[in-house]
Image (cartoon, rainbow over all chains, first blue to last red; front, top):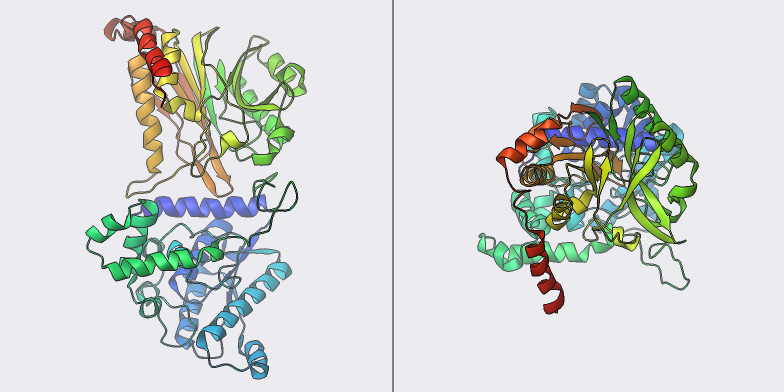
Length: 270
Length: 282
């Protein structure tokens, strides 16, 4: 599970640079929450494209996450990248004033999609590609909002587990308070991923690594000392979230169908 | 004999652009008195073609770019990768060797990886032979990427008396560890060292770089001498133009110490293989 952070940095910086060149973008736009993943991603973008070509959008809901906004601003300052802060509370509240709910998950997902919509709006305004910030752990667990934070043009850190992103973050000199911070989806104050999932990231990543990377059967994963309940929970989360990692199924009717046998590379002509 | 390996990144589908990239490197090679220049697998088209295979295919006998490569090969020998069309609608992942104004040889990839991230057999027909051909520099055999990892393929070239084995590759890097570089790169070097030494041949491996659909081609092109010693190695992941001089006397030197070629018994191996083919149903 160990990575060589300097080699990984090289690969990801090269990836961002090449992808933007291929698709004719000079600029990137990143949603910066003040958490680890978006800080690391912003830093990689800055290295790949230059500070003036990275726009960080800080998109808080009111002033409920003041500490995170402060952390985001520190990253922006340290990297010298461009930024804009937009409060999403008015847009989200207008909707919920007409369709009230007390369900925090609903509201959190709505906020994630509001942010996505602003990122894509700025993508058009600025001719900048939206850069994803979803790590491998959350992609596999489906711990993200479909069409929300999971939406992007390219996703540089998508093959790094959370704990590996942390290693990379240290190498990139991301501020220590961000490295140490408990990861959170930011749906409500005090929410943390580990509390909500009920397993800490070290353990989750170890289990995922055994199952996904090494293709170990459950029996062998259990023999490493993980409880059956924990392993079952991880496996169930992977299975339940497959839809978040795929385009929606299309019923095949014709002889050649999008998603079935209309098979062209993403980088067509690039 | 001076050779150059072009560790580059083609533009997917755009043969016109790739042709000019080839010319640029060939010019550079000619200026550096290179005798043989080698490009990676599918260097004229890019790798992740999928349904673009038919529209990027070339019929070698009637193709304007091939006519030009033939002409240029009066000054320098050229090895490159392309999509070949045979019998109207049969497509191969092929490699061409141009020399002295002629298209000297074509190898059609036999082992088409189709598992995990690979899907070549969905789009390409399978080549049916491994053959050695005479070049101005010695008897040569061509392999494409996964061909090389089957030691039967290497053995076939060895038994036909190859002096030089050239591998064109588009190998994506995969697997990480604490060390710098992809863990998969080690596998190619391991095979390179083994095949060069135990066949007493020059082993030339030319891999590409760049990203296609998120796959990162790992570069790390290399050359081993007939005693299994590393002569030259390109950087991993980055573009490179690797130049090396091969001393063909090393073939004789190696074979005076290592007798694998003299002691080879293809007829015994063939008898054993026949048994596998005709007696074992599964």
